[in-house]
Image (cartoon, rainbow, N blue to C red; front, side):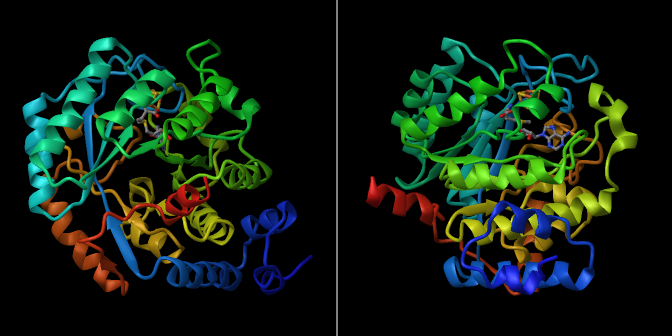
Length: 363
Ligand code: SAM
Ligand code: SF4
């Protein structure tokens, strides 16, 4: 078996190397990998953390993903849609707290009204903010025309997780119908790139049926797709979802957490200049989980700015953190926590993906 030191000294990792690193069981080897990834991040991105304010503006969703707490089939969820005024107030809060951008996220909705509403929102927010204010959209699968319209309205970034790069696994964690089609999701990701966005994707880690080989292939998929940003984190159970039945087959939470850190670390090795988010799901397992993510090579945090009254209805998984808090509570503690690990929030930087900028120069 190859030693971790030998692998980390290689200029490139092959699939076997990735499998070996993902399979680490020894604490010292795990820490060696994490430290190595952090040094790659320091060299390429510095010790800067970029903030994006997350606004979960609606939990209406036409899809029924087997893992997600706000799936359409979950009748226990109270559905909500924030008004434009509420969204604008939240953006105002973000600006006052020196955020240089927001992420607008919701369940999947497709209609002419929805497309136009999002375009108008972007235009209105742009008028009320400085010209560089950044919009990331995370609004699921849409037509190429819709992606293009939102890009032209002024959104710069789009996040659409592939969830898993294995079509076979994808089929096991989604209903078997046209609405949940792996090839369609992949095509959407390509359309997002074609529309001009800084493109983000990601996977869930520790899913039922998932193997270490699947995860290695996920990392190679991200590299092959030449992705600019990644948000990936542990899969967490939600009691009112069909996948909850499989909870006894899952790896323990602590292992899922460490595996997620190794995924981040290996990705930083494979793609030194992309933006990698340290996700809230990490914090659900370990209170300082997102800080561990930063130490493993991530460089983006997305504090939740969703108004407190809506948070309890956007529960993708059980034990989601900060659901009783208003946004400002979270932000105050966050900047202290970032400083505690020797990093700085880059308040005056839009934090565009360096990988995207380089890609634009080449294209
Ligand atoms: N509806 C859009 C979509 O699916 O792309 C955006 C919102 S969706 C809630 C955002 C992400 O939440 C999904 O891509 C999925 O990876 C993640 N998610 C949903 N359920 C989860 C769970 N049980 N554990 C971890 N992540 C989950
Ligand atoms: Fe809807 Fe996204 Fe949840 Fe799937 S993951 S049910 S598309 S909100």
